[in-house]
Image (cartoon, rainbow, N blue to C red):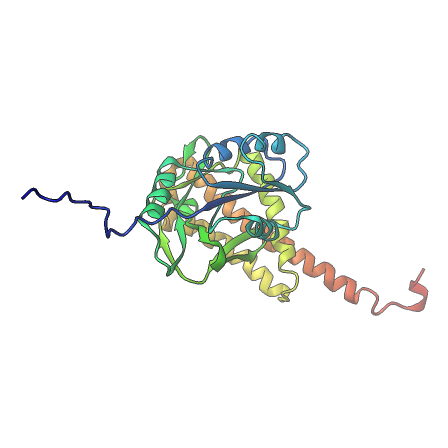
Length: 286
C-alpha cells in the first residue's frame, strides 16, 4: 500500500505575525541630521514626525521618507514625544531622535525578536546608546552604555521625566537588546557648550517649584561636580577613551555646576521679588 503524503502544515501552529512598528521622531531645524536618521529606520512599518515649525529643509527632506508629518508648536521634549506617540498607529513604538541612527545590528535584533514572538508580559525593550564624539566612538564613562528604553508597546507605555530628559515608563517587563543606537550628539566642543547652556537653563527652570535653601544649593554646587567627574573618569573608566574621555568628564562636571548655579540665580530672583520692597522708607520710593 502506498504511503500517504505527509502535509506538515496540517495542524501546525502558524508562525506569529510581526507586530506593526511605528518609528516616532520629533524635529526642529534638523536638516543636517534628519536624512541619516530616516535612512536608518525606513524598514519600519511607518514613520511619524512631529516638527516644531522648522525653518530649514527638515520637512522637505522628511517628505522623501514619509507622508505622516505633523507640525505643532514646541511643548517641550516630553510634550512633543507624547504627541508623536498618540499619532502613531503601531502596536509598538520606537522613539529615535533626529541626531540618532538605528545601527544595522539593532535593526536585525529588533526584527528577530518580533518574528520570534514577544510575550504578552513584555511591554518594552531597552538597548545601549553609543556616542560619536571628537572623531571616535565613546565606549566608557557616563556616556556608555547609556541604556535607553525607546521601544515599547503603545498601549502600556507613556512619556514622562523632567525636562529636558524625557523617559518612557511601561507597565510590564522590559527586556534588554545588546546592539547599539548611534548618537551623533555634537559637531564640536563649541556646539556642546551651546547645548549645555540651553539644557542647564531648562533643567534649572524645571526645578523652580522645588524650594531649597541657598545653602543647600551651594552644597550641591561644591559637591556634585567633582563627584560626577570622579564617577565618569575613574569609576566608569572614562580615561580609557583618551582625551575625549577627559573632556567628557570635565564638561559633565561643568554642566552639573552651571545647572545648580542657574537654579541658585532663579531662587535668588524669586526671593528678591518677594522681599524687595520690605524695609523701604517712604522717601525711598520714587
